[in-house]
Image (cartoon, rainbow over all chains, first blue to last red; front, top):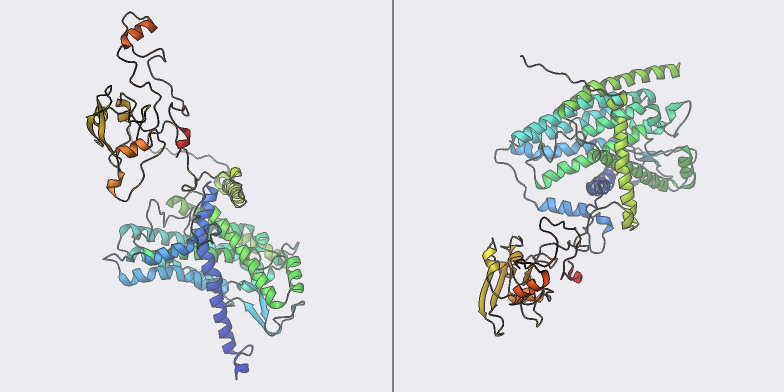
Amino acid sequence: MPVEFFSYGSLSFNVLAAVVKIVFMILGFLMPLASILTWLERRQSAMMQDRLGPNRANIGPFKAWGITHFLADALKFLFKEDYVPGKAHKFLFMWAPVMAMAPALIVSAIIPFGPSLCWGQLTSKIVDGVCEHPVPLQIARLDVGLLFYFAVSSLAVYGATLAGWASHNKWAMMGGLRASSQMMSYEVTMGMAILGSFLVYGTLEPGAIVAQQQHFFDWPDLRHSWGIFTQPIGFVLFLTAAIAETKRTPFDIPEGEPEIIGYFVEYSGLRFGMFFLGEFLEIVFSSAIMITLFFGGWHWGETIDGFLASHLPNWILAVVTFALWTVKVFAFCAFQLLIRWSLPRFRSDQLMRLGWQRLLPVSIGNVVVTALLVLWALS
Amino acid sequence: MAIGVKVVSRPGSLSQQMYLPAIAEGLGVTFRHFVKNFFGNVAGMRGKTDIATLQYPEEKKKYPARHRGLHRLMLRDDGQTRCVACMMCPTVCPAHCITIVAEEAPDGRIEKRPKIFEIDELRCVVCGLCVEACPCDAIRMDTLDHAKPTYRRVDAILDKEELLSRGIQSQATQGGVGALWREKVKGESQTPTGAPLVPAGPPPGPTPLGPEQPMAGVDPTRAA
């Protein structure tokens, strides 16, 4: 019975594999990286501004440049008063942080984070790609992958808007309205920017898109090189829209912590912490999806990939590739922090003009040109 | 005249309107700072970074020499306080933080001395008027230190012994020029009126003060 229970392809095997991957992805990748980003943001911005930043927190002699500040912050959030305004809508006030954080966790199911594990051949080298029982390192291999991403990530706007509405505070309400208008505007550009990648790679499934980017740069058949070479304009557009979706400077009009008061002004303690962490989860996820679409996912070019595949047993290869992929994602997160601490905030009308009058026409033009080029290349 | 709307054209090349070149330039500036500070700090080369942060409890900045800080009482040549309990400083003090109770001095040449000399550092506004009012160079604020935080308010009231413990010997001539100062000034400066006590020095008017001029009597080892 146990043999059959865990045999490859059975329902129980698939469910178990999915649960293991979910737990690993959330506890082993998303949460730690997002938590460390809360510290890294302050430390990196300090370094950029000729300051030192938080470098004091330590566990006994373990200091590591103050990296344990994120633990201290979490502890502080836990012990702060959980204040709910008297006239707030209790139920929505309670659930809005969850609705803001959950989409970023859910959509990360479609991110491929490594090559397939070969069940039964874990300790041997897979040279020719012959893999009888592949277990993809991707939680959900959906054919509609990126559409799923758009469907779920657009739910995040409910978190912001409902938080503003349920707080029974007019400033929070205005912040929530600004959040909803901004996120809806930039979602259009975001979808248009990705459309070019669909056309080039001919699929919506992130795992398949990554599989096609196996070469770093492949001239003249660009369809197997990284997305940044096939869709450079699409990348800039998507990056801009993704930063606007995470509601961070230069698009932090919904929040505007110092002056214009955002939708979470009434939140405190762990509930505020959830908004805070949700924002960093969105950064991690948007970095991961940009790596997936434009920077080859877990591929590092055929030379490095081939070298690793021919020298390492399958399970070590998966671990090493995952670590290298994490490096890529981490670098992209740091790049987003760099942008956040370099640029000033847009005014609200400038934001709308940029979104609707500049980015949207450019993204539509990008789709048209890409479609013509693909048609010309295929014929 | 009707109020018109003046449309100001905003000239700008395409590269300016695209924002991207300027953004890339800005990112370059911040990234340069980050790399310099990051690698300088990791390798422990504090001199090669631009970091301006002072790690306060470990590193302390020296106060400038003219800093007004914690009070002290200066000493005579024999180690007694220079204060003669003339009540100038409690009179001029705008915060009424100085308490002096006088007593007769055993030394015959000095009429009075303070029995109690207390300064409430919580009330002190650090204006320095007491130092200016003092005719004997007995009270100074040049300890290059500030009032220490305390757990109890009463601990912020400094008594005579504590104020004297920071004191050093003044270099001002003890007892002034003396009772015969008119004759002395006449003999030296040859002025017919003999009014100015002040010997030859800088002309009246605003005196330029250098930022780092050391004050006479400041002990550099007492830096904070």
